[in-house]
Amino acid sequence: MKKAILVLQDGTTISGKGFGAVGETYGELVFNTAMTGYVESLTDPSYAGQILMSTYPLVGNYGVCSEDYESDSIKANGFVVKEICKTPSNWRSQMELDTFMKINGIPGIEGVDTRKLTKKIREQGTMKSRIVVFEDECPEIPALIQKTISQPGISECNIVDRVSTKKYKQLSGGCGPDIIVIDCGIKNSIIEQLRQRNADVTLVPYDSTSNDILNAGPDAVLISNGPGDPSVLEHTIATVKELAGKVPLFGICLGHQIISLAMGAKTYKLKFGHRGANHPVIDCKTGRVFITSQNHGFAVDRASLEGTGLEITMLNPNDWTVEGIMHKDLNIHSVQFHPEAGPGPHDTHDFFDNMMTIINRSVSR
Image (cartoon, rainbow, N blue to C red; front, side, top):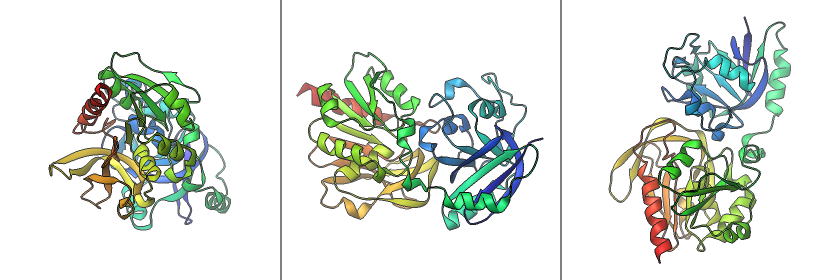
């Protein structure tokens, strides 16, 4: 039987059973409150650089299906669960979660009181952490704690560089508008939503120049979701600033934050982030409340929007963080949540319908 240790930067050490790959991994420990969707979450590039913890106590009961992947592999650095199901039962299942983790070389730990640990994270904030899965001799705990403390923080790394495409990549040849996606770690579900609306989608690296993008003649540019601190992406921010007013701009999650920074606003790190599939969002114009899927550790500073030309379109009633913005004069729109809902409720799929309407209106002028 494989054993495992989870170590936090404050010296907390938790022993459990290991699953997935034997080895060592580190990252920022974050929790997700969704009851299902572990495959989508593990393969979401926005979790790169982080160790994912599920608050739901039983994980893996419906196995793993490749149709649910949000990228080509697991992007989370590790997985922490209360209990992993060894015998999944679902007609779509292609393999067990343990096997999926092994194939991807990702260590996991089970037997953890994840709800107690979640309370700790809520009180003290996200922490650097490390998982070690081993079969024989237990590693030295003091050394693991020291390594965890000294590892770089989430704001000291350019994690997007790990998950962004390295070259221009045309994904579909639809008969609709030409949309260039600045790929900061885009999810497959977002691409699928664009394809369903006949968009011609091209992915470009996160460090592409505005000239390269404009020379391609897009009808619109979408800045995608992705991992890490948006302020680290100075080149992308500069590119988006140069694109503003020259082509319609849209942003999702990290893309929403990048647009805000490009227009002169500020972002800040949330204490423990928003990660789950049941976060309410209020439409400021209609008063309607949507239930959304979210995965982010940074937010736009509401006060800093003054004087940028950006106005708030949506807010989170739990903590009143900014969930949506648009520019008063320019064709710029973005949302903090994940409208593609992979996983999560489909309340906000109309973001993509509205996006297409705005683009088609712009093209027809």
